[in-house]
Image 1 (tube, rainbow, N blue to C red):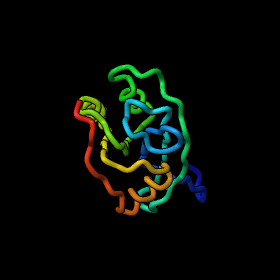
Image 2 (cartoon, one colour):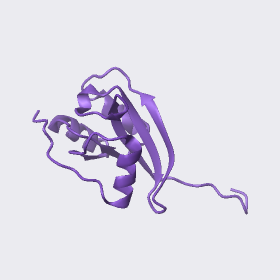
Image 3 (cartoon, one colour):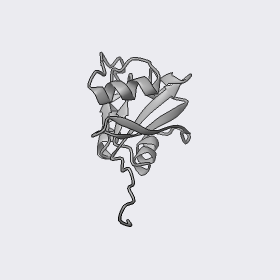
Length: 123
């Protein structure tokens, strides 16, 4: 990189499964995924975009999100097997979040105020 030029580097990508623009109540019923690139040091969202997911098949979305360099998923309800598949790809999962807008969830996560409750999914 030439001297004097600066490039903001992000080192955290957060995925949020969405239904009707908010956090999907069950991961398996998502319509698309919000991907937030954040700078955790500055606690800033660098970019937030909605991305269509490939057809849902067991295990496929974990590989897809890993290829997109996802580090963390904020979810409401997610089955144990899905959580295991994400862990195998090195993706951390937070479950029990409330159905809010992705901007709010990312902001709460970055500020340390994200509230989580019970994961109602038992499979």
